[in-house]
Length: 314
Image (cartoon, rainbow, N blue to C red; front, side, top):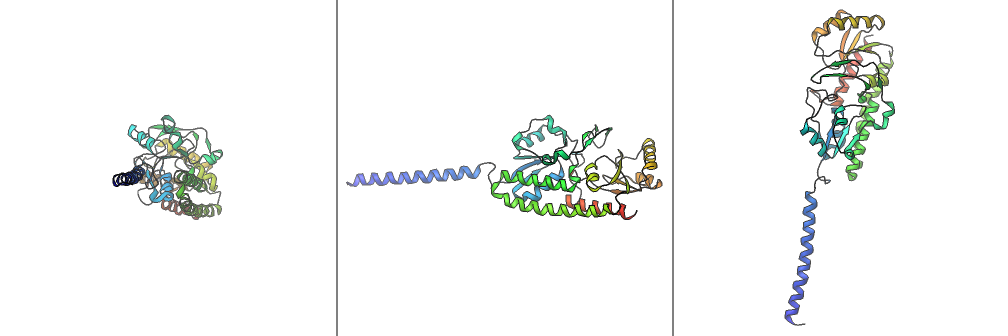
């Protein structure tokens, strides 16, 4: 072979090698910048704080959870603006509570493939509500608690099932992390189970104790733990008017409760008015929005201690 042909052959071989190397490098670069790769956290949007907590506990560093509801709003009745809706649409996952919670979801266009109804598995256990009363609280305007009760997570066994749905959804998006998500879920489920058993132990000692609750949001809680409750439509940040006091007095004739459970810390005037009628106050925070302090579990643990007072004092 002459020298010139040999040089051409070497050059051709080198060019082929260089081309393959260049192609490989290009693929590495392309895949390294692809959105939604395993190296990037999943972009998860949620409709309430319990789901935010579950997703963060289970997903850890592998998720970035967005919950755009303002701190002073009730997530159940909050409505997003166009910017918020666009952010939900761009998410990798959208975690819903189900049971009619966050009614705005049914009124906007969201990618069905990204939606996860975390209570779908137990939809046959949804509680129907009849005789809804129209009222308002916070900045949500007038609304009625109708059709379905939606604070499902207050039954901690249902909360655990919702957390499991979160873990499964994350695992479908990141199959290589499925086992890690399941381990985190099981740890969380164990803590929820401990609290569930503690509440059962408290209530089972005196299951007939009559209680008043400030708002009709405790349906799943009352069913799971056998609470004997009557619901009002009172707000912690508003002093009841004369008509509300008279309605309470009429209830107490047939339902002689000595404790009232509030969603949040009530005004002192309300506490004093109840005290005059032989009723003390405790808080059991549903924790639908981000708490001022602590997290979902610390709030629930404090709720349990507050509930214990009502049953020990009887």
